Length: 176
Image (cartoon, rainbow, N blue to C red; front, top):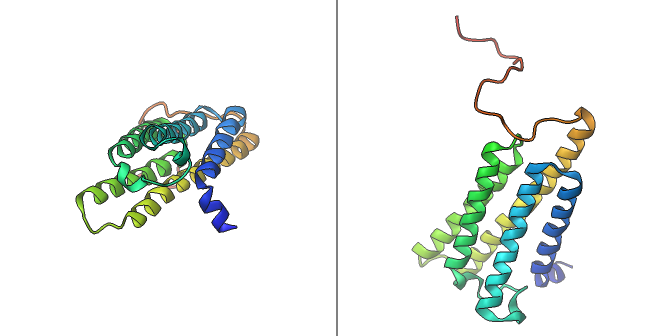
């Protein structure tokens, strides 16, 4: 079973993100739609790069992953920037997690380019696992949004600013 998933990981990943994107369109709010759209765009750009670089046969595989270098770095950099922008404005926690694992992917690119001791297999596993974590964080965030919307009703999708929240806190004030 694991071998089957590993050989078809590109298709499984694409189907998972496409399904989450469709679910975000139907059940999610704008932060969920943005995050799902960013992940789907990253996958489509990576597949397009593979198609251009090595032909149609390896679009869903891993061949040439560790040597593609700059194209994947640019895709991951753009994905990190977009997720960070959403994370800074969204009234959610999970986009911060998604941006964090995307930062890990960027660091793996830098480590792979600056150190000769990084195994191409270790680089590929670490880089792929961060994207799967981002998918998992999106799924959990989407489920939390649906559950929260049912329990509390509508709530703000975006932060209005960095001003102090008018909500009471359990901690006594240290002022005065």
